Length: 273
Image 1 (cartoon, rainbow, N blue to C red):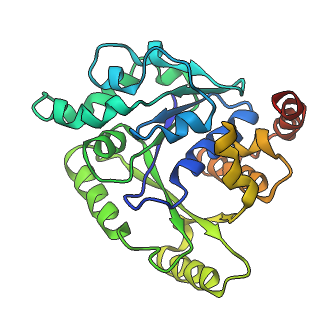
Image 2 (cartoon, rainbow, N blue to C red):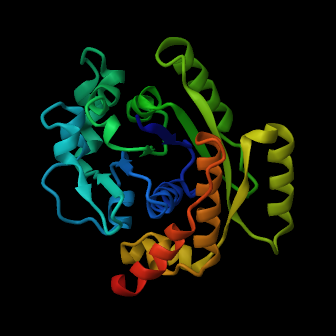
């Protein structure tokens, strides 16, 4: 059964979608069956994977008109699949406000497909509304991208308080997957200070891998590709491969990224340019 991980942070611009796309892709090249669910109406994870043609999307899943399996589409990576988002998702919270069991819509929808994958990642919107609550109710754990900037922990306490409420009332088994530091600039003293403060406060919850500020990483979404297909030799690609290794280590008894997974990226990349 799949490990369901919600990638959440109510603060926007922290590298949440970038992490969702590239962590999912990194596990896929290690030949793990991975599903990415784009739960943001802006649909950045969908466009960031180059998926533009689809008949059904997450709105249909949450309104129960179409099954999750029927909404799933292929991506350019063999082991990576996507449930795309659409601007229609903007109105789903209003539509579900009086629905019975509205917080469990996503969890119920995933029941039929959880055995199809080893990992399911949910890219949450930058808010703590009904969509994010659905993601946290459906998830086994949550992963928090945290930018190495001045207001790094602003809003994090609100997310953790929301998690406490969800654990108490809706999903008692929800665990913290970890915190990943993003937008790290080695030349910036502030990045070092934020990193030290976060690690001092959250200790082993913080991943060792750090995601740097990287031009190629910033460019890849505009080309509709994860960084592994856009520039496998970049620092951004290496960082997400390292993060994927840590995620697998935490979840699979220290199983490391397969070397052939990286070789597969090298084989695929030229044909995707």
